[in-house]
Figure (cartoon, rainbow, N blue to C red):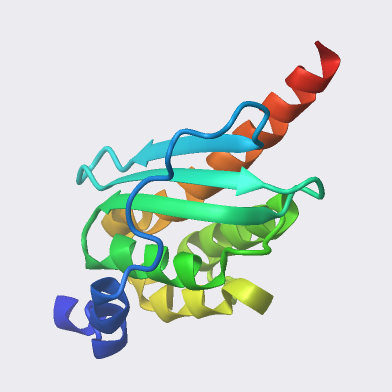
Length: 155
């Protein structure tokens, strides 16, 4: 049964992780954020760096992923589609992923529709957290960048 979970599509995605690594330290005033998420059950981890433009859209991105093939596959889809995404796009994609995995939702649409390749993970609750680490870390990084900018503007 678990062999069906690791389809050729999942393994292909996991093998090609775009934007792998970390971003260099940002210049002063850059709209930079870092997010880190760990799946407690399995230890899958994602550290994500983003830089936002003035419209809160991702203009630079890097991800350090230490996860199973499912987490890597989700990170690959994210890496393919992230440049130009807004915080709202990320929130909607994360919420759609959660709904897909936990309550039979259709999954993300639009720029992150590729995350639907992970729909079969629905039947494996122990794998949900590892499938979500990259998306969660990216959303956290983008929110952090936006908050830092707001705080800097208020100072």
